[in-house]
Image (cartoon, rainbow, N blue to C red; front, side, top):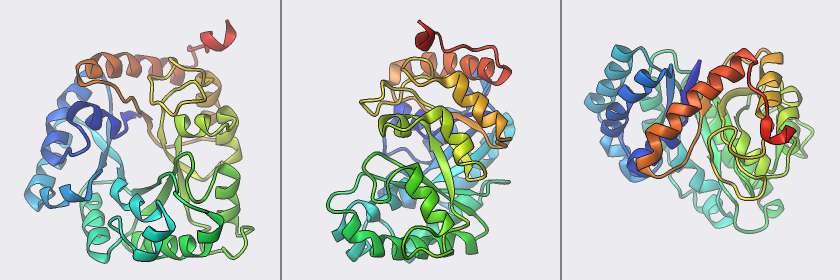
Length: 290
């Protein structure tokens, strides 16, 4: 399935988008040939907008258009992992009520079993905050799994955990002090983040086989962490998608493009065609071959 990340709604409506915005943005996705979308609460201040009625309206709109929610992203919860002070205070939305509300929204979407927690850039000394980080993460992991979801981390450049190697170490228990607590953690594979972090994106699906359950497919130049249309930067997408297929990745291929509102339909319109060609193996990384 080819879908879109929440960047589609951010580019269309801004970061304060809510359920009404999501519902109004779905018809274009169906017309353009997408099969799914990721729902998100970006700002904690928008949580009250997600009433049972407005949430049900999004679910009904998606069903009527033949679209499926492929993951739920609780972006606002990442705030607690942005600094040592935030970890200590438990701010950024990591309160019982906020987590419960986010889980109830995620549960409203039929067949969705993925709950995404983004880890933003960390301000301060990450190593000094390691123990507190793992304690906070364990609390959220327990709540998410108790609600019947798999927890997937989205690793942004400069986050408190680190890159793919640190993630594997945390999951395997080789990270000092992690034991086997995080063996069930999964990953949202954001190609742009990893490329900007200097990681070999095309090799990561095999290195992280079994851990990747969702994607954000975007491009950049490997320096600035942009979210361009796949093929517009320097990421070897043909090899990356082939690597995902080789690992029998069963999730959705979700496009992530951040662009001005007036370019949304054009950018996402051409992206779905590109992803379909990548799925079929007919796309080549012309920029890398030149």
